[in-house]
Structure formats: structure tokens, C-alpha cells
Image (cartoon, rainbow, N blue to C red; front, side, top):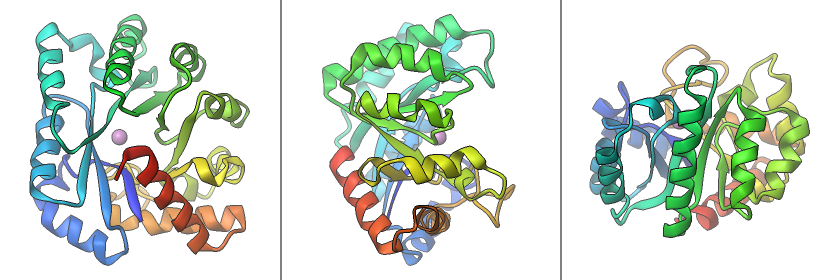
Length: 251
Ligand code: NI
């Protein structure tokens, strides 16, 4: 299994990276796409990539810090993106849950980073929270796209539109939550050749660890629930998602 969206570069995972990686590997999670999203987590992602062969990285500026970004920050990002372990640009996107008042500047930085990804021929990792239509309106200007809707939280009805753009769909802990109707419906519907497994650890721990610190060793819980929802053998879900991750992120 490959955890295609994990923040081993965030506390408390970062301080215990050795143990976190070892226990995940014992649980069958062999490789990690560690996502750096701001001034602290981008250098930490690079630090982990330098230290572990199993770590590849995605780097970009998160929409919740869009209003703080300056020209120099892009110099830093441009330089960071030259690291040989970089496999994607992100997470980038729109977030009207945590940042309601910065939509215009979020859109500006999303365009800027989508153009960077296009120039560098990198897949994109898209964070979208309470902003489905507005995110779609920006992304469609860059179709066909290569990338993933990280922890897809849009409505089921918009799923085909994002698939038509060329995007993969990332599913995380919420798919395991008892009353999570939409993520479960999305899991049933998403074609298996567009599905990716993510933990987003240390955030969004799956059932029965909900509310605790998440770790990549919980990835099998997400895979098992998706297999149950799709009524497929677990091995088929694991094979397909591993293949998808390898192909999309050149792992
Ligand atoms: Ni994330």
C-alpha cells in the first residue's frame, strides 16, 4: 500500500518519523507521499525525503495561507520543487471553511500554482473545502489535468465532472465514519482505476480511532472499508490503488 497523502512532516509525527515509518511498513504501507504546504512543512518534507527512500514529496502553498504569501515565498517554492524527490505540486486549492474572506487571493494563488505545475509537468494535489463549484471553475481552465482531488468532500453529483477533468479521487478516514453518507457513496461510485488511498495523518483518523492522532499505519482501515463498500476483494482494491499511485506520481 502507498499512503498518497500524509503529513509525517507535522507534529507529533515528525518528531517520531522513524517509528511512524517503521510501524506503517509493518502494517503493509510501504511508501509515502509526504505533503508540504507552508514555510515550516516544505523544508521538513525535504528533510524526510533526504532521509528515507520510501518518502517522496508534494510541495505547494495551502489556500489557508494564500493571503500571507509574497514574491519571495515563490522563490523558495521554485527552488524546493527542484528536489529530485518531488512528485507533485500541492496541496493547493480553495478553502472557504477555514478562510471565508480570502477567496479572491486564494483563486489568484491557485492559478499561479496550477500554471507552475503545468510548466513543470507535475501532477497537482487539490485541497477543496466548502468550495466545490469555485474550485471546479478554476480547474476546468487547465483540463485535461493530472492529479488528485485530495480527500474528496464534494457532492456525489459533482464526482463525474472532476473525473472528466482527468482527476483521480483520494479517499481518507471519513469514508470509515459511521454516518458519512457522502464519502461512502463516493467510494462506491468512483471507478477503481481513479482511486487513491490517503490518510492525511496526523489529521482525520479513521474509525475506530476517530478524534485521536492519525498515523499512516491506519491506511488498511480505509482500504478495508472501501473494499466492503465496493463489494470487491481487498487485494483488488490494494492492487489497483497501488498501481494508480505508482502511475500518477511516478513512484
Ligand atoms: Ni493534507
